[in-house]
Image (cartoon, each protein chain N blue to C red):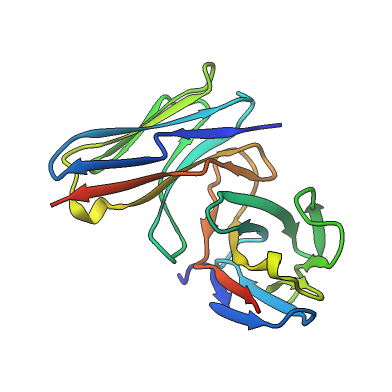
Length: 110
Length: 115
């Protein structure tokens, strides 16, 4: 069974710092991996989708990488801002469903 | 193009009542997924449906829970005889296909509180 782990569970950084969030999964047989952002009491906002054949994707200050063989993905956030404060979730797509990690709660201090 | 819509956004039920949660997928999407997020836990897959068919219900509790996606109208997640442990956020997602390359788009969720 696929298991997804995110480290760290919580992270607090000063504004302007670059940071990396980690995601690992146990079964490399995935179609793609998606990073989401969830604000308290809200739904999920898709940030980046990486296909299994890709190594990375970029959108603005966000860059996500994927190493399928080792079961790892990272989300890099450049020049963090207070508005980036949220919970970040990674999810792997096995075809019929997404398996989610429990998230990294990020706080960016002004 | 409107996103995935869920209603109600908040639902309060007493123990033993029925809860009906609705999900309208994005236009052109024929695949719907339901997930549950318990307090302080991650999202867990419940069921995957296409129009009029249940494709994968491996995450659904065996009793009291059912889901449908009729030919016309929204997908419905139905919880009979709710208990306090059913209190959670229920999210619906849709995609145009499960073939590689298609991402899931999530709705805002329905927060169910059982008193």
